[in-house]
Length: 79
Image 1 (cartoon, rainbow, N blue to C red):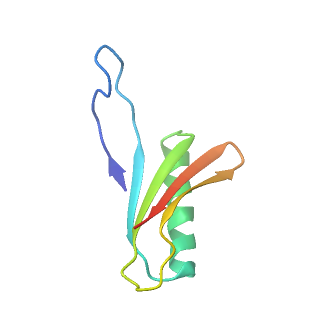
Image 2: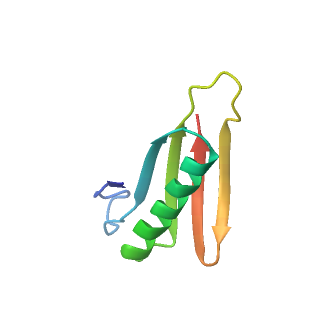
Image 3: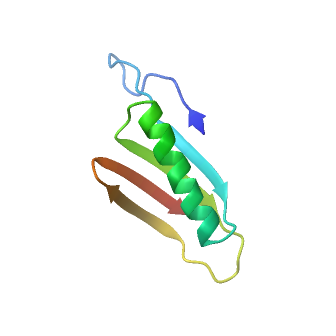
């Protein structure tokens, strides 16, 4: 779980974000990572979270997708 404090724009208040970094180890591991990210989002009262998965397989589906779960949004990227 990552927490990046900082001012994203001059004059704006700080914004809290959650970024989960994972190495791809299959779908079951990925789903556990999604649940873990949702728990972090719930704990920090956030509506949006990010997950970046590093996949070293030769045949992989890379890209970015948005997953909407109720009022929460996960932005997932596989590289």
